[in-house]
Image (cartoon, rainbow, N blue to C red):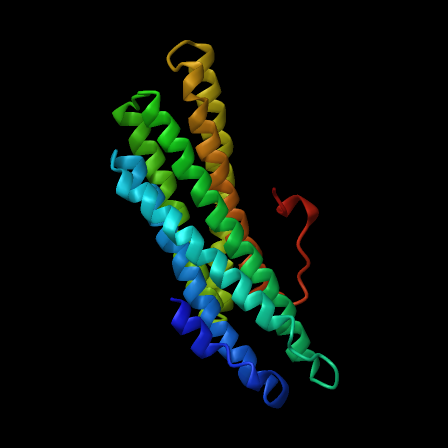
Length: 232
């Protein structure tokens, strides 16, 4: 990964050909997005299989994600914005937004595997029905990430609109699922330990939120993220 980043982020292009420099950074951002997707795939695999290799792989990929984030950020902020077209400055801002969202997706994937590891260490067993419901949620978010990669790479407004539409579906599912979990805990069907599942839901929904942010920048390049779209 690191060799690819270093080769593509040619600092000589920043001053001589800022448009080509942006294209180079875009290609590396697409690679970064794929790392985010791979981290999510690890999280889903770990949810379905007690195998520490999934946890370890996710943590290794987190280091890769951090490397991409710093490398691309440092490259983009050195792009001279004086005497360049407005579109160059706009894309610089969008790309900086995008890598921030991708880095946050990676953080949520780490949260997911850490929640699952804690669950396994406590010996908490999930029911078949609950596992199927969660896998359906994982599948929706996985689709959201895949669409986001394609949307950013191709600048497809149609694909971006699919992401926005699916975000509404995921938000509704998250609220419905969260309420169901709390009801089951109150009824004694699930224990307080199963609050882990609410944490998992929250992180899945936030991953979708960051996909939504990226899509909105494709639909409307002047889109400004709402404060509530940020999370810590």
